[in-house]
Structures are given as C-alpha cells and as structure tokens.
Picture 1 (cartoon, one colour):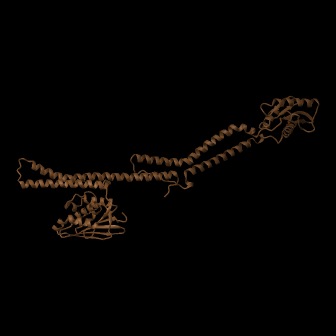
Picture 2 (cartoon, helix red, strand yellow):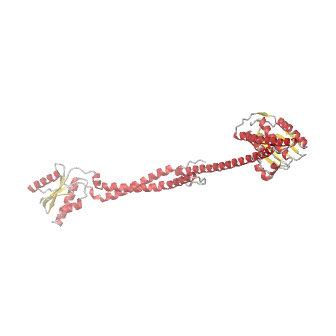
Picture 3 (cartoon, one colour):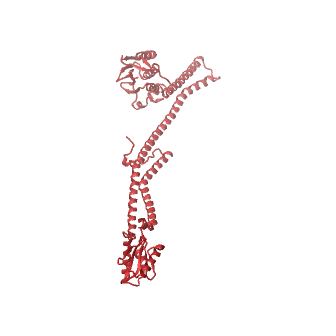
Length: 476
C-alpha cells in the first residue's frame, strides 16, 4: 500500500490553499475597511469642473449671508468644505480672505484680490455668476441683494484622486498591519497548529524510543505527509522492537548454549580428573587390569570431548556459512549402502533389520559427504532408539519436484512435548539423555539440510519418522 497521501489531504496543498484563503479574507477585510474609510471622505471629491465648484460655493455662501448676515465665514467654510480636496479661496469685499486649506495658494489669493478690486472699481456685476478667467482659473461672484460682496476662485486643473485619501494613509497602514498580524496568527494557529501537535507527538515517541521504550508509537491520525511519516516511524519502531526481541532471544540462546556446552564438557572432564587423580596416587597400589581399565575410561572420555568439540565446530561452520558445499549429482542408493555398512556390526549384534528403497527418479544435486553425514546421524539416532529385533527403513522418492528422503524406526517415537525442540542443540528429552549422545547430531542434520535448500521434519508413526525434502536435480 502506497504511503503517498491523497492530494486534497496533502499538507502542501492544505498549506497552499489555507494561505490562499487567508489572503482572500485579508483582501476582503481591507477592501471593506477601505470602503468604510472612503465613505468618510465622500464629500472630499470636487464637482465635475472648477467652474461648477466655484458656482456651488458662491451660491452656498450667498444663501448663508442672506439668512445670517453676520455669520463667521471662516468657521463656516472650514466646517462645510474642510474635506474638499480641491483648494479654493473666498475673497470678500471687506478684505477677508478665506480658504479651505490651511495655507491658501499665494498667487491665487493675490490674483483674486486684484480681480475683485477691479470689479468693484467698475461696479461690475457679472450677469452670469461663473466665468473662466484668462489664467484658466474658475471664478464665481457672490452677489447679495444685487451687490457684489465677494469672489470665489478655484485654480485650474483637478487634484489627483489619491489626494483625498492621503490623510487616511496612516490609518490604512496601521489597520493593514493589524489585519496582517491577526490573519497570520490565525493562519498559523489553524494550519500549522494541528501539524505542530502531531510533530511534537512524533518527537516524544522518538525520544521514548531513544530512552529504551520499544513500545512507543506516534499517532497516525490524518492522511497527510505527517501521518505517512508517523506510519513509517511506527513500522521502524515495530522492526526495532522485533529486532530487540530477536537479539534478546539470541542472547538467551547464546547463554543457554554456553551453559549446555559447559555442562557437556564438564561431565567427561570430571570423570577424567577423577580417574587421573586416582592413577596419580603413589600410595595406592593398583593392579594392572584396574590401571588399564582406568586409562580406558580416560581415553573414552577424551574421545567423547573430542567428538563434542568437533560437532560444535561443524555446526558453527554449517550455520555460519563457513563451509563450502560441493555441487554434484548424488547417488542416494550408494549413500544408503554406506550407512548400512557403517552400522552393520551393531545391526547384526542387536538383530535390527535395515532396509532401503530408492526410486530411480529421485535425483539430488548436493554435497555427497555432507548428505552422508546427515544420514549417518539420523541412522545413529534411529539405532539408539530402536529396541533389539526392531527395524529401520531408509527410502527416497520424488515428491512434487522435490526428493523426499525418509528414515523410519520401530522405536517408541518422540514424546509429543519434545517434537518442537528436537532439532535444537543439546536436546534434553529424557529418552535422549537415557540412551546417550551429545544432543548435537540432529542440529547438524538440520543445518546440512537447510544449507542444501531443503527442510526436515519429524513425526510419530509406529515409531519416529524423520522426513527430508530436498530440491530435485532439475530445481537445484
């Protein structure tokens, strides 16, 4: 099963789409803020032309003066037209000069004063209240009760639209920064918050693994890359736990093997030491037959130790891959013949019958010496457990592109509780202990068979039945 997350669950897509949504919300919020602030400056934009603006201001002031002759025009203009972007000046006949800007354009003010003075000198009242001066500025006369009392002048050109929003720049900048910080915080909390919590759980699990807690696992919730990483981490943790258990079992096996080897070697060493100490006693007079018997026991125990050490070395080479197997066609019938010849004397003495049967189609490629060693060990094991007058059968036949080699005996068989461990080193079943043997023979058989790519099993069927399955000659 692939660990690649579905695209819409991918962390990268979620981060990307989350930030796109965050930017969209931020832009909408800023747009709404801009519209609200712009609504506050709705009166700041001038009329379509300077002449129209001058006419509107002149008409408004005229109406105000007619209704309230002593009105404070400075305060009135500041309150009504203070937000108008387009600058203008109002020059009254009595010398007052009013502007909607803190500092009125000097040239505009001077020209308007001169224009008003000239108009008053000629006692000129325009029939139309608005006109364009030769300089391009717009003018509108303020006529109250048929008398010219003032002049409104608007400079040529229109102000840039951004001029109306310039006073709002600091407000827009501050509000934008606040929105950005709040939006970034919300995005980090909603997008990266859950991911950070799961990464922290993964970190805690890794720390626990490092501290020796092999059961630590990370949460696999979610379908993104973090969940995939958590699953990979958990698989690694499970593998580490399995390996740790295997190492512990291996260490236990090593300790048990060391104890078993020590026990097996201590038995002949103890016997040898006892007899040698007896032979070394000068005050003890031993007759020649007794001395010879003691020396015979020492020799037997020495050979037993040599046999145990040899089996251990042989088993270590087989299991560690240190020995090289030959690859050639094996004559199974000849192997059976050599097994029978080696044990012929004991077979005759104990009246045990040994029969063999080899199918012509049973052909194996392997190391003849090692396969003979395995069969000799199985035959020796069968002899130890077969009562006098019993029977041992060797057979070889094809079995589904393999070759089945069987060693049967007519002994009591293997106790069911010992069947799973019979191929272990130093097998400690009571029957095996009672009849001798180092307990390494069957382990060597298993190692030889497995080095040939085969398997070995044991069952009870009117005695013990050891069955070897080896690859056939065509599959070798």
